[in-house]
Image 1 (cartoon, one colour):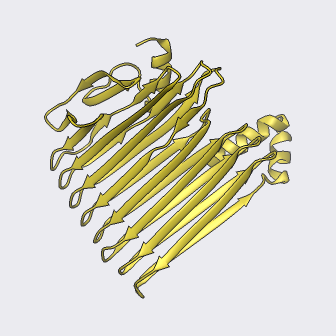
Image 2 (tube, rainbow, N blue to C red):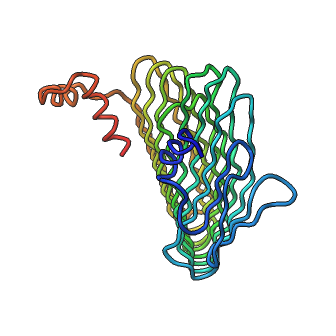
Length: 305
């Protein structure tokens, strides 16, 4: 790995070199490094690009890193990763992707990830997208995440995109079983001419199933964002969708939350708020010695944390 690779890995996966435990590092469509252990096995697919990640039952306090790097232009990388989480397991999966594009041609990574989470298992899935490079070529991410939760399972999705991505279209599909829970924490920052779309479709099928989706976003410059959600309650369940956005300059945010209570026992709530930074917040920070830009950045950082 060169210096650019190391910087990208640090940003998207908090890695300083090769991690411990199981990992799979992919660069420019090819395997860079891989390791499995007795608790988490990584198996390459034979019919298409991608891997199967198999977490054994009852595995606790383990993590697996599967970062992807793109450092060339005129390249589209699509990978299909399937995750099989055993009963009663508790695991953290870090799947960041970083693009460094210094060319005039586009670079794109599309990760198609499917999670099969067994009974009473828990997954914390960290997905970070970041791009840099002074080329005029686009830096694009179009991830698809599919989540199937068995009885008593819990899935925590932490999705972050805080810089440099020209365009993204995120699609997340989830089916939540009996006593299972889906928690989503999304953070997005766009600037310039960047565009970001996030689309959540959640089915609360099981009795006492639950979903809590919170999206916080900031749009600057001439950037555009669209948040869409479609939550269906098919049983006695609880679902909550919250989308909060800050708009600056000439940017635009569109929020379209939808809830559908098929069962009379379903309890579904959606909230959406988009606005500017309050003037009194800026004035208070500026009275402490910050410039207007520094005050604005501090408010944004606090909002997205």
